[in-house]
Image (cartoon, rainbow, N blue to C red; front, side):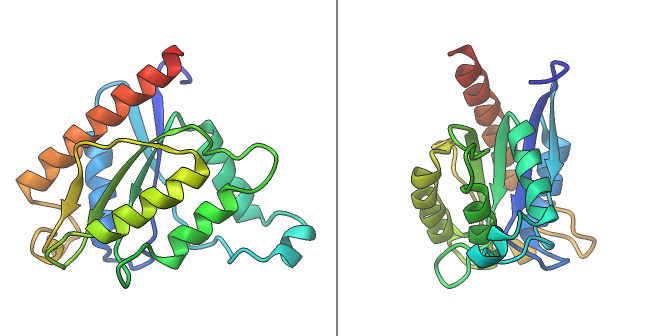
Length: 187
């Protein structure tokens, strides 16, 4: 924690401009508890992991991503659900972050949320992401779970999450994340 401001790095696996998960991240940025800030990281420029290319040097967008993760006190991931799982953009970014001598995610507190037009709100993607977290040694918040179902009815045409229940859930999730970060820093 630098300058007594808790830094949270947030990202989503959706590249779509009108992404419901990007709307949820923007809402989270506005709902951050006092003394914490959320930086939303765009994953669009991160190339697909290729060990041949990696042997020639870590790509600049990957270095920048890993640096932001290393500087963060905690992580917030908003994941869409693609075919019952996490999107390849998100998995790719996490794979890049897992490489090297000092993986920047190792042991960091994490909060997960999802937004989907479907009835389950991205639940299956969240559970797959939690499996990946085991390998990365990310420490996820278990409760509350925030799964925004029928997201297309809860985000305005301007890309603003307007559903009060979803906003309350995000606020509670952020409070739990901040608590977990404080506990991890006391050790």
